[in-house]
Image 1: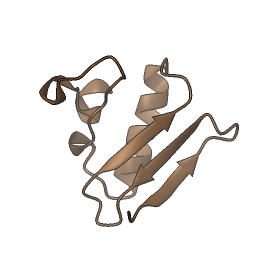
Image 2: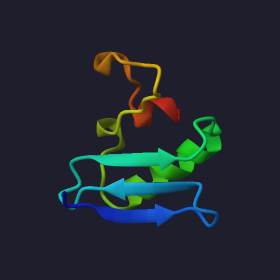
Image 3: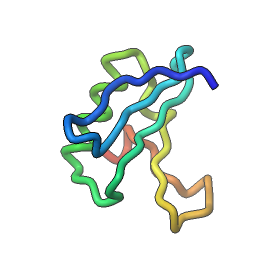
Image 4: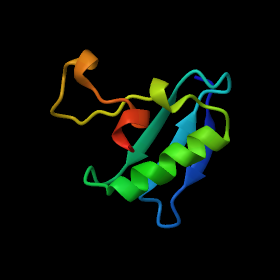
Length: 77
C-alpha cells in the first residue's frame, strides 16, 4: 500500500502513518496504554499535515465493533 511515515518516536515506541491522499491514518504503538497528551500530540501532527482527525478511529485489540471506536478528534477533547 501507499503510505507516508509522518512521525516516529525517538525510542521507536510509536509511529504515525498516513495515506498520501490524507483520507486515513494510523497510530501504531508498542504499548497500548498511552496518555491523553500523547493522543493530543498525534492529533496535532495529523492536523498539521492536512488530515481530518475525525476520520481517524482509535481501537484496541479487545474491541471488535467498528462503529463503537472513538474518533481521534473526540478523544482528545
